[in-house]
Length: 95
Image (cartoon, rainbow, N blue to C red):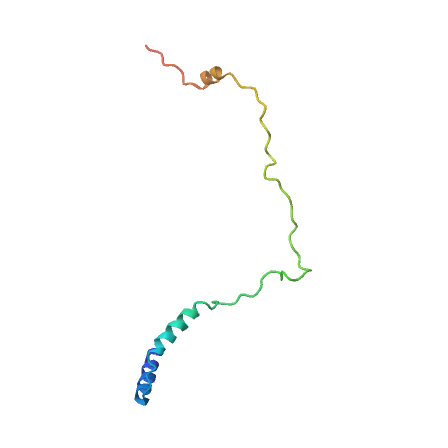
């Protein structure tokens, strides 16, 4: 519809001696590009207004991120031969 209107306007302008037909595509592209900047819908505030000083908010609590940590130093080195032998697969007997 817009192109038909633009074509009629261009024909009428050409008949009067002015040629403004080149402006319509520019205006159409500009309008289409700017229509993407408009919000689809405006949503009402669903929660309390942040400006209201009487608005109820959740309490702030503190929880340490390293609370379960316990230091393992200084630790005595374990005898590695006995630990290695305890986890080694059993030796195969040749029969």
